[in-house]
Amino acid sequence: MRKSSARKWMLELAMVLVTIVFVIPVWMVLVNSFKNEKEAAFFGIGLPGSLQFENYVKVFEEANIVRAFLNGMLYCGIVGVLSLVFASMAAFVISRTKGKVTELSYYVFLSGIVLPGAIIPTFFLLQRMGLIGTYASVIVVLLSMTMPVGVFLYTGFIKTVPVELDEAAVIDGAGRLRLFFGIVFPLLTPVTITLVIFNFMGVWNDITTQLYFVDASKWTMPMMVYRFQGMYSTKWNLVFADLVLTSLPVILVYVFGQKYMVSGMTQGAVKG
Image (spheres, rainbow, N blue to C red):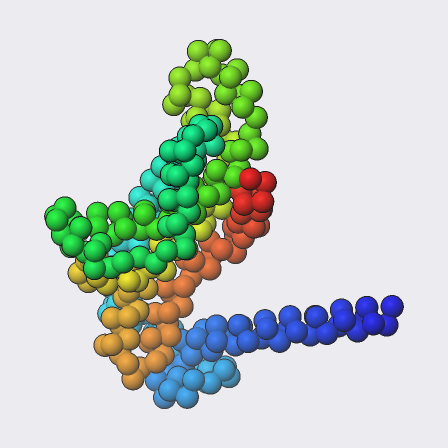
């Protein structure tokens, strides 16, 4: 009993220490975003002498926050919807069709999870298609990055859905699209919610795709932090305020959706 209790206390202490390691940088960014330029230059974790709310006003005026936010929501919305639809449909075909072609297709999708992206070939391909510099170039690339995980999770979950449901729907006269979207897709809600959160966080935090394929007018908030830091590299109070505003949407989405994210990944990855 003593050994078990000691092990438990050591584990809890280790978890507390790890939590502190992760919380301190976040706290430092938050408190320094309310300090003046001189105080923020020391990168301390103490409270500010007085709250400088004008830092956030300055960021809104100079960092093009509204345009960057709308760009981010555009990418997240379009990529999120298309990724869910295409990944779920592909997973349904893979799960319900036995054959070498569908099996090979599944492993091709899985390779997208582990293989790194190639910027130069992608750039020349998009250039040939006339998409460089457009919103579509970022959307296409991000869609190819988010779909593999979606196919993986959806395939594992659909395999747990009884085939008898498909047969009953076909007997009732349902077509393939009605069968999928009317019967099967509503059953995939746990995985769908997980992918909504997962895709939002991935697309929102992406910076490399925008850096290579579009100009600054089509950048999102994380990319604007990169640009803003170059403009105000000595004014860390403003940079920290910009970081807080950029991180806020992702933090809110994660806080309210984390329980769905964990359960959905468990059902999609383990049950299959």
